[in-house]
Length: 612
Image (tube, rainbow, N blue to C red; front, side, top):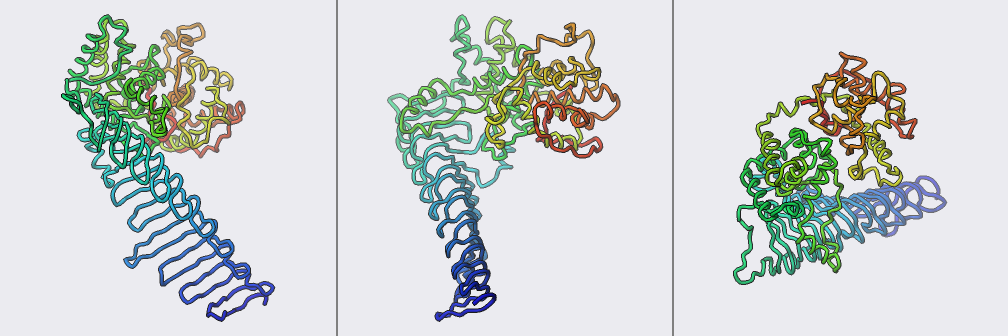
């Protein structure tokens, strides 16, 4: 037999399709009494790509086969009498689910992850839509086993919760730690919606053993837990201290005072005196539209570092004395765990429960870092320690910062937040977003990072681990031979400073004053600021500001949006120069359009202020 034909076996099974040298090989259709296969065959076996349907059992597999077994990529569907269906789409090996795959249940629940021998095993994410929960982590035998994160999403009522979040809670309940057979077991941390958390040992979903409970006000309880409850000694109480204090950890600051204990009380008195206003301000900036978070799957609604940056700009806190790099380091210090928690973690790291200890190794300049209210208050204290160093006592410094710089922001109107903001048309914003990876690669080069060693492109947060200086940016424009009458060294330095220091930003149409401090050196460059550091967001802002200034000096009445793009994309312009100098691949620029339009959240510099 060779070519097209039909063959019926003694048991009633039939085949219709291609034959090759007396073998069933090619493309054809097998029919059984309760099943049909359509697809490729080889020597009588399903081999290649094909679809097997079992109408009576409401089952269908469509995908790859190997010698009669499901093997490779394929989709398996189950239909139920009520019309719902369950779908698996992913990898197969030897007729079993093995490798990556996605399993969609008829309830709407979805598992996306790894399988071994038809069971969930390895890393995977399960979203229970019917009960508003999500687990991401390790699996074994269809159950969470090992390190994972379980989040209670409250059945998706995110919008309602976000609108009222800080009055009730600041995050979703979530557990991060070890699991055994689907239950919390081993070392782990349970974060409560109110901001409290338990960090310690678990057994069969219950707090069991040594642990620390950190209350909303920052106070701590360290002891033994049994059956989800603390084991208390005589006269011992479990709960927040309720002594009218915000518990922050500033012992290193207080050691510089003549009377540390008295100074600590003074700082706490200032914070508690303005606690309501500070909480309202925290809430205000938590709701700021300036978040621009690339993390679309947030499990909390606490203050982001990018929102704290916005607060600092509005309060005009960044300065040559305290640039954003130093502010970030101050905040990082405030976000560190307490000495009590640190000591316990160090002990657990030397035990079998080490995998459940929280990992705090995030980038210090990452705009998506989350700041609790107590950490916010501690950050203000540490900023006051630097900003008002000329005052004698720490409580006087905190009082000055809170009353002169921070509390006036409560009266700030939304319209004021937009004053001096760099307005760029939508086309330019979209283009800036499209070259974000180019600016990021350039920043890595200036920071001395080998592009081959920086990690995968998808790991965008690594850029926030580095910083450069104003001097590096000035050298960049000199090396690119872009310094001219229309773009002087002073313009470059001014762009860097405007990106960093709020108090130096003039109105959008301002130009450098020849007698200003900016042009105090013989070359018109303030060399005292040359070694001031810039983070990646500030560098991105600086590129946009410098481009705008260069274009507007040549074209006084032209729109700044297209001017920015023109400076970047013109022949022998900025992008051409850095491509030749550093070998960075530049995507083609779209045609120029008109001005006007809202800014884009993912642009290179969506938050640049050019004057307030």
